[in-house]
Length: 102
Image (tube, rainbow, N blue to C red):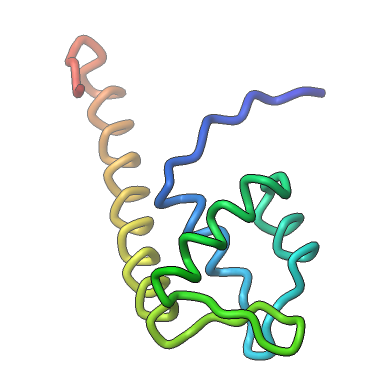
């Protein structure tokens, strides 16, 4: 059965990429599948993350840097708050369906 997926924001894509890194690193193919991106899009984001000093490639493995860990920590907080606000919006719409929360 096909379920429609919503388009992810850049923040969500970067979050999905960075949260895949373990202590030992990750290979490109693993990262592509785990972050649910096609190869071309993954390379685009990896290039941007590497240019910003958030990830690096060493010994054939992609590794997250300290700067990348800090960004991941901030994105975890962002995603948590975003999900909390989505839940609050749903509660408001249930109570007052006529309201426009845009």
